[in-house]
Image (cartoon, rainbow, N blue to C red; front, side, top):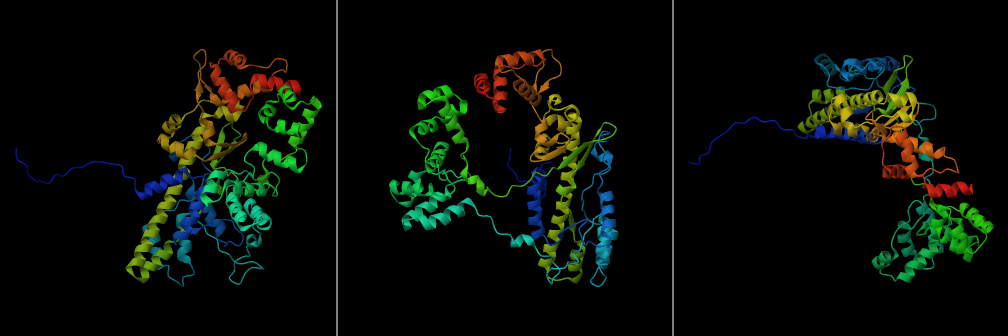
Amino acid sequence: MTLTTKLVLRQSQSLIMTPQLLQAIKLLQFSSQELSAYIEEELERNPLLERAEVGAEGSSPDAATQDSSANEAGALPEDECGGNPDVDWSSQSFLAVGDPGPETAANFEDGLPGDNGSACRMEEAALGLSATSWSGTAGGYEDGEAVNLESFVAAPVTLKDHLEAQLAVAAPSAAIRMIGQVLIDSINENGYFTGSLDEIAERLGVNLLEAEQALCLIQGFDPSGVGARNLAECLAIQLRERDRFDPAMQAFIGHLDLVAKRDFAALRKICQVADEDIADMLSEIRRLDPKPGRAFGGGPISPVIPDVTVRPRPDGNWHVELNTEALPRLLVNHSYAARVGKRGGQESDRTFISACRQSANWLTKSLEQRARTILKVSSEIVRQQEGFFARGVAHLRPLDLKTIAEAVGVHESTVSRVTANKYMATPRGLFELKYFFTASIAARDGGDAHSAESVRFRIKQMVDHECPSQILSDDAIVKRLKGANISIARRTVAKYRESLKIPSSVERRRLKAKS
């Protein structure tokens, strides 16, 4: 057998993660806030992308007409969404921007300056999009833009700024000021010192006594209790300022675990006081602030925006629609790209515009696919969990990703990405899509399995309605659940009870005896 060199032609198939595919996957798992931030970055990076402000004040007279055409063009046909008769698809709309057809492209070529924007309007009508223009308002700037009132709002004072201002005045020396600055950087938003004095002293090249002196200085700042290393120290600082940290209170603060369990008998022996004094000390503790830094806030809180809205229909079915406020509305300015190509210019400019146009078209197609997938998955969830929407949590069915994936015709990983950080507004409240996926608990007689969430709900109802003289133990809860045809182990009941933050039967008996 001789070794020779030859050419061999082979044909094979392989899956390659292109940048466009990676972008589509990333968009699918974005929440509405993350998607808005990503769109803002793309608007700054890509000159062909524009934001479509529909229904704004000062919009052009054609905006309303163009917006209605957008809804018609963006409507999801029923056959593309599985043909679910229980879901009303007629009002679903979102922006879908793709490459223009040959006729539209020809209009782009004719859309040169001086045509009063007719080609651009024709482009928008052909694509089912709408844009608005700002006409200016009284009190605006000369360039037609309105005054941004947010630019005149003072920045909120953070906890760090508040402590640094006090440190600049109270520090006895430059060394203590430097150490205190590092210590303030290790104070979290709740006002607790989370660093290590030993590590900070070693890193700054100072002795531990100086670090403790700086921390003691910070603990005397406003708000009271800031700079504490744990809850007991935080409460002790506030009590010292009120001159209430006597030996009995010190023993009381040193056994906060007994306070949490409401074991007043043990506290009475440790503090060596009467029941009235224990009640007074407990009342004093309740007036303190366990999180002194929360008055300054921990940064802006973003409200949860539902991605899907569910409401009942008169025929007893459920209407599922996308929240249009959570969907980005974008335009692709093809006329600008056509002008660049018409005028010639450098090859690098044409290459850049071509890449931007391709990126913009792919982005809008990915957004369209994202909206379709979210709507399909949400509609199937509503169909699977119809009992929950009609009768409540007790009728929540066991559901996994595989069931939804097979019904919709996608992979389980796609369903996992769709349900991550997505919310559904229902008549029963706002729920994350992952809420509807729960483990199954077998029935005793081999019937339909029960959802783990519905079992938790049953346990909570049992505990809420138990008599103070007959506190239910975990074994008693197991017996009652078995009487309801739910086969469950005692350790599972204990795990569900702890997840619901329900104390044990001993602690509940003590709490209800004191109340």
